[in-house]
Length: 201
Image (cartoon, rainbow, N blue to C red; front, top):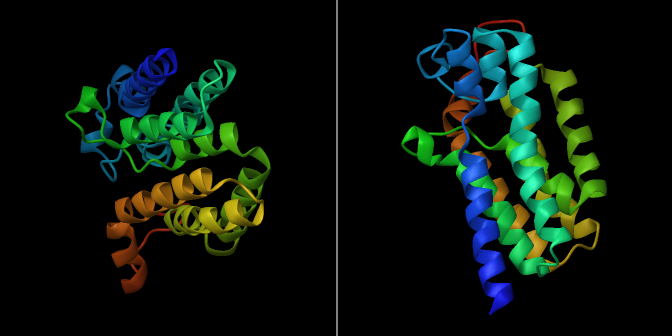
């Protein structure tokens, strides 16, 4: 019973932390509503474009921490692997559907990165490498994010992670791809912006 309540409160904490709209807060402090500028996304890429690179970096680090911290807390408190995976999902969903922004959040890439770093650091390094390689080849952040996310289940499986973690990575990957469906349409039509050009959605 204690484990059950611990898992519930850890998941609730993870969701609330994931819901903290870092990009929106930093943009507001700079006098910019990032939801009404650039791509309208509250993630680090749009914040960097419409507010500034420093704010974008702060947003990126904070969004990663929103996924990393709850997972590490869950691990240190001895929650089961299944419970810890669901804590990670709760933080991820908090970013996608934040209670503080009427459930209109970001695309979840940075927060997913934090969750993966906490649960499977070596596999995550491979995903980071995939992201960087695709970005260097294409200069398209959205495509790099999609390719890294889509690779996650395979990479987790290759690193012999449990079915729970592999299944969690599959769920996260599917959600990230779905959140990028507008980007996918623009990629197919050849209109998706590249780094150094107009804002990417």
